[in-house]
Length: 102
Image 1 (cartoon, one colour):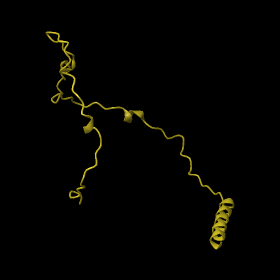
Image 2: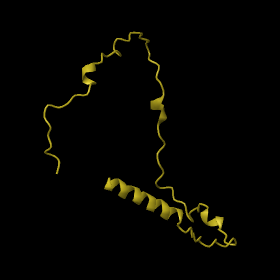
Image 3: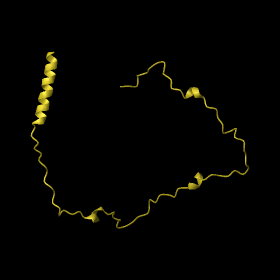
Image 4: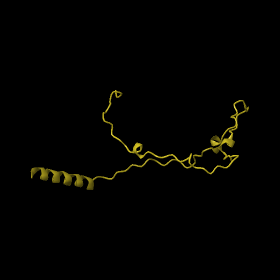
């Protein structure tokens, strides 16, 4: 019972202190409006002398294009591979090895 009274008293004190707290907020002074930013300093600058010694080689995108085979083969048996579902299930190891932890 004593603990309940102490808790209620603490809650009422905290509520009372927040109700009667003084709301003094000091705001920072507003910056002057005549400050300007030069946009020239944000523009990209070109070098005085351009050197092209380290030009990247052009990528060969022809390897990504599909290739039509010379002879059409409609046998899809080579593409079908059976899936072993037992390897997809998570398993718990029989022993835990913590030797690599410092």
